[in-house]
Image 1 (tube, rainbow, N blue to C red):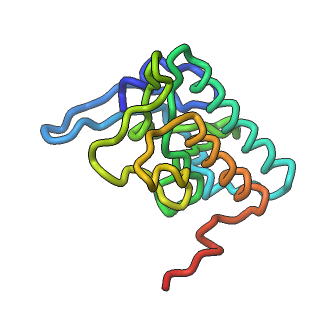
Image 2 (image 1 turned 135 degrees about the vertical axis):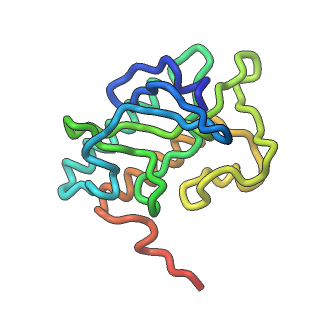
Length: 164
């Protein structure tokens, strides 16, 4: 997670500050975002929703614009206690949690396959990931589509899905 996140500087990406090791796990430290996450700050107007979608898209464009593009791989705004979009002190939306991100191979322009099975959030995942396809830029674009849908409806996809 540290490798893709370290050194990224963009207004729509929460900065990586460092890490600590508690003897068992490495714990990553990012800049504190005092306004919490997108779930706690759901847009209240169509214009606000479009601003959030634009800010997330801007962060993704920055990641995808590197000579070896970085795929976030787990964009999710409003899922219970696992949000990867935070709101900064200035009200700006910022991506965080690069645990499933990959750096695309220069020659092949495809992401590496995950060797440990299902590593994505199914509700927001590109359907190709369900067939064990590698992550690509389109993995993030698919999730961005769902983020845009949610912030325009002012609701989570979970509001429309029932457990059976």
